[in-house]
Length: 260
Image (cartoon, rainbow, N blue to C red; front, top):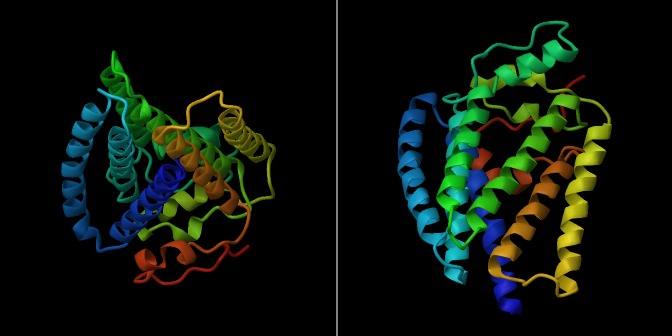
């Protein structure tokens, strides 16, 4: 049982680290290569839907790995489509000078509206595919990724000490104007509290024997832990080169924080 947990944790961390690194690497290539990157990942996207369909039919260790890996590929397609500028939103210009409150929120939604709608459409399709199926690892993985990414986007909107704007590719530099650099906000405290509370609750349930420690459960708990780490990076000046230097080596090394 211990070996199964270790392998599941390792696989989850590897998918997170390698998937993020590959997208960072592709996004920093010449923009003329984007069409080929997206075309190749679209083939992987089709295969990921096949993998999810197959994994949903039966609860097993193999299907847990297949479901999780397929959703990571699926999610990676959306991330690559956004970061290459292919699916973003109707607005592709910096935030209007002096925009505050509702106006700033509306403009912030406009820069990523199509991306968010694509994610919702993908989730709706997974819900339809899940109908009557036994294995829920795939849909739970996608839902967890969506909720934690939404939390991260809201934190960038309200403001965090380290918003990572310096890592944006050249064709998306206008997005930096929508980020806010400030001390920890109430939303950050609430979102982190909810995420960490959920993680500790899951671990407590497992210790009490209230839930079965399956491969899928371990992967979801590990993924939630990694998402919490991503939120922590918004507070402390941890350079991404320490995790993904191999993917960012051909880009100029940015400063740890934005200049005032």
